Image (cartoon, rainbow, N blue to C red; front, side):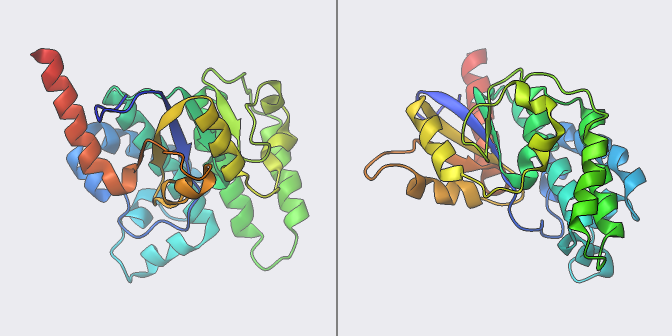
Length: 257
């Protein structure tokens, strides 16, 4: 829990957002060895599925041909996943523990990994396979074939029931045994973040941490709750990581004292 005077439960929000900007995560990698180590590990697992090493694309200089690849779904999806997993492990390393998780669209797989539904190798296999399928399908106009092939990959994985509560962006309800159904991960239904946020707030969430390249969910949060309702503390790692790090140092200092 963050030391900002708020009480209640903590939710980690794994957002989809737009394509990451070039250099996203570079400051965190330079400042925190745990983040850098995790990012290297995840990128290393995803690289066999991609045409170029993922980290070289993520950290490419703006305006270069490599950085422009982040605007393409086959690179944007893996980049968001790698960033979120590294952010998640960094927060856990700082002692911040989620009570509940929410995965929004492209953030579903990172949330599922954090909830213990998929191992990191299985999650990377799913993310990498989808990226490769989407790269080969450009201009072919066959999304059904891509989804079918992705579903066959999902059917080979070994999902487990969530170890931490996981709220679906499709149903706006906690998930359980349906995580074992490949079709559950293929749903293209509109995201119900507003309904999920209202549910989480009713169940006592007052600290919201958004993982991903942007802050879209934390900005949208006030409009998702009943008028006059206070959300509590809402922060995005990409935007507020320095504040979160300072809070970590404050809490550690208080513990030592």
